[in-house]
View 1 (cartoon, one colour):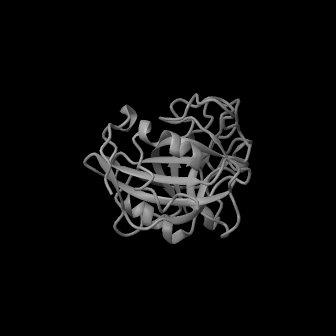
View 2 (view 1 turned 135 degrees about the vertical axis):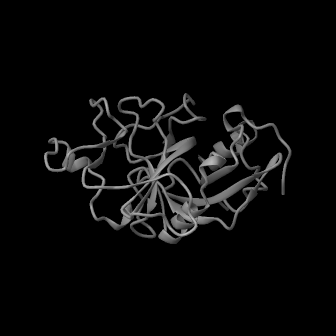
Length: 239
């Protein structure tokens, strides 16, 4: 079903949208679905699938929509996934190539790659590369290459990125879940086959964005923000 509407200015030109709706702010699980923009509406691209959020639930984040909303906002190490609408950034991977059919900017994570979560650092919430033969003291805790299966694919969710605000949360990604019932520290995680499907669908020229909201906030915001209508997003709405 396609519903005519005026898109929010921040979503003008966005032709790929990833949408996830959680039951409540305290939820650690929900569902996610891919949408393609079709004229004045959205069309689902395939079925929805289960995802996990932060171990402490959700909270407002800093993105293209949602920044400045009343209520609690994401803080470093709070265990909550940021809500709002966010641009996507680079895919980081242990591999030297993306899955077959994927065409999106990526970076193969090397021995010197790190993501800073030091709120006092000028590189806070940024990807940095150091000399792995002479790493700084902070590197061991912030390095990106651990040989950890969950981080084989990291799709950057640009929360608190433009520019980063110290302490407002860092290192938010889509990545492989560690178990079907094990939430994250603030990322959105899923089964590997679903993450690979997302990666192969992404196209940079379609300006992909990610929308994550609890149900009540989604139903209040979808029209003003230009998101899929409740009928379009029916597979995501908690029963």
